[in-house]
Image 1 (cartoon, rainbow, N blue to C red):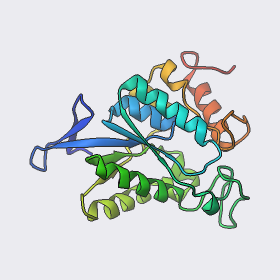
Image 2 (image 1 turned 90 degrees about the vertical axis):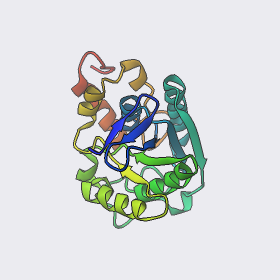
Image 3 (image 1 turned 180 degrees about the vertical axis):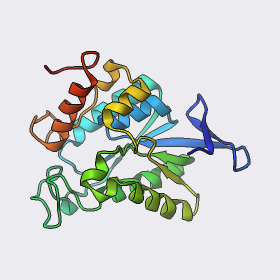
Image 4 (image 1 turned 90 degrees about the horizontal axis):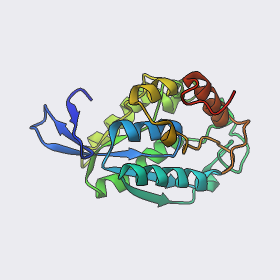
Length: 223
C-alpha cells in the first residue's frame, strides 16, 4: 500500500498509477479489528455480511452504529450460508479438518468475495480487511500469504480491485493504539462467536477480554 495515500473523504490517491483517486471500502464485521480500521482509514464505504453466523444480529448492530458515528456509507449483504458452516460461529459441530473450534471452511475467502461483489458496484477499488497478526497463528486464511494470494486473484480480474490488510503486522491492541481508536467507539465491538450476547467463553470473547487487559486502564472494562 506504499503507492496509495489516503485522502480525508475516504478515497485514496494513487501516487504511482497515474495520480487517480481510488475509492476505498472496508469489510466491517463489527469486531474490534475492523472497527479500529474503520476509525483509522475512514473508508468511503463499509460492507457487513450476515451469512447466517450465530452472532449476526449483534455484528450488524455494532457495524451500523460505527458507520453512523463515522459518516461511512454502510451496505449490508444478507445471504444464508448456514448449511455450509461448521464450528463455533455456525450451528454445526467443528469440521474434521478444523484445527480450532471456530474454523468455518473457507469463510474469509467467501466473505472477501461477497464483499468484493458489492464493493465493485459501489466503485470501490481498494477493499480493506481486518486481518491482524494473531489471525495467521490459528488459520491459514489469516496469513500474509493468503492475503497476498487473494489480492492477486481479485486484482487479476476485471475491475482490478485490491485487497489490503493494513493491520496484518499488528496485534489487536497494537492496532487500537496505532489508530488511536476512542474507547467509546471500540466499546461497540462485538467479538463473541456463539451469540448476540457475549458468552464469555469462546475464542472471540477470550481475545476481546485479553485485548482490553493489554490496552490497560484507559480502555479497560475488566479487572
